[in-house]
Length: 130
Image 1 (spheres, rainbow, N blue to C red):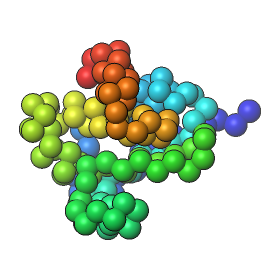
Image 2 (image 1 turned 60 degrees about the horizontal axis):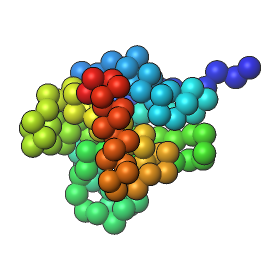
Image 3 (image 1 turned 45 degrees about the vertical axis):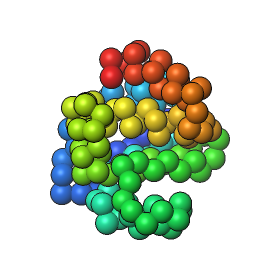
């Protein structure tokens, strides 16, 4: 039996203040244990380039989700941008990273921005105390 892959890669000079174990638990709850996920932390320059290439948006963003197949995907996070946005949402930076992660996972699940997605986010934030 093949063990599904789950990886977190940091390509920045910042050490994200997150727990890989909590990321895995959240991922398993939202997408299932069989879903293969790669999470990468990138700098703002790389995020701007990715956002421009894949979304035609010429700015660095906090998170991007890339579904590869129904059972595999990638999430890329810019902690520098996330830390700035955490203040706008009155959240601690670590808490906001988990908040973003849930948001990105729901996109990988096929959800678009909507009140339904908001309700799903709230359900998982409550479940995980985020």
